[in-house]
Length: 130
Image 1: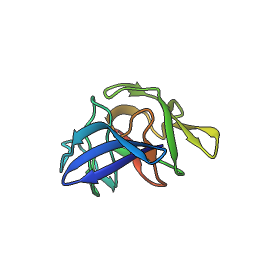
Image 2: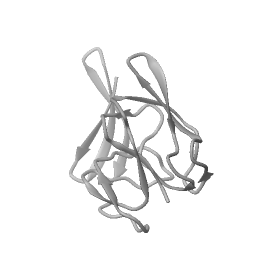
Image 3: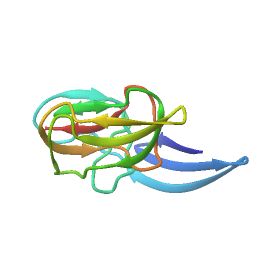
Image 4: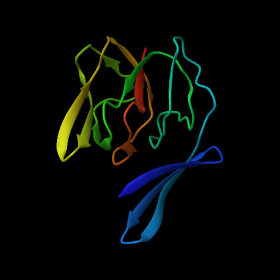
């Protein structure tokens, strides 16, 4: 199982299996993100093309939050991609079912705060659209 842990402004992605832990990735976190509208939530980042946050911070744009705890199976867009309302953004596995997360507005993806294999909790910010 993969866990994401925030310690001293760094995000550590750790895989734990049979009592042993292996560090997969370390990412520096950022306090603010320069973009135009305001939303806030707890996030974690393992995607190299996006910025990350370890605590509740101001996020600009429409927040795409996790509707339930689960694991990210696939991310269908990149930062900067133009999306239409109803477009598939993320595939989230929860309770052994694949759940599709769709865009709530037309816009441009401004942040992606998750990566394939990362785990999310309910209401975790996964992405933002401006």
